[in-house]
Image (tube, rainbow, N blue to C red; front, side):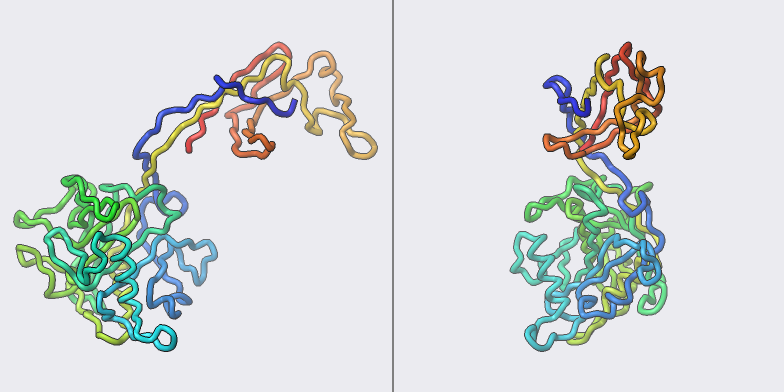
Length: 355
């Protein structure tokens, strides 16, 4: 017997378990301390729109995988050169800003529609988008932490900040159908930071979409200061109106020098239990070459390899396959140790399939 159909009471659909979290990055890594870019992409025309960031150097390591991408958008197109030819007049930063504005906001016609927790709008925003394969149904709110550092080059402030979301103290808002929290100063262990009784706001976090929007004003020196006058990262690279200023590189350096991004993915899991029953008359023979003799043509001839199996055939169950009605293998369950099966034994195995 090769296949056995499940009876109606052999399959039990379990409850949905909500909010199951797991590590987000490649190889079940929960924290990134080093990130890399692709020199081919950053030097290309597409690099003026976004950069992919990897867990290893893609120029030298073939196993490197994209973890997230970064982009800079400005509602007037500042920080990028005007395109020529068929796209004359278009600017990459303007296109990026419009794309995220149309996707994330209720009022996509508003030029400076992105506002932070203090109600301040900004014409420029940095966007960090987690690669879709890195999270399942969303990034787990309250379970991520990003460090940014402005310590060299364009970054003269010498400031290091730790960012989280404010889901621990807020229910968030729903904007254009998307749940959104504020990005604030703080840490996973200590929670939202308060300096002088004030919360420092840096942008917005969309957990269901894996998108972080960081205000360019808040990252630059002398602008976007908070109520206590100490808010800002000290970045001194405002960008020109008609030149490519590589703002993606700004954010890349801030993340690279910060050296820390932790994140967990989140999903709702449904468990289905399958009861696999092998009765005494079933699965006592095998087509394995260690069980039957082979003829001169190399094919199994149906004769048992061991004479003791003639009166007392026995097998050892090691694996159970689940098939569809077309006999296509869909899932495999492995036993922790071989299970003896013969005419004097019946076996019931419970297989749990999470999906």
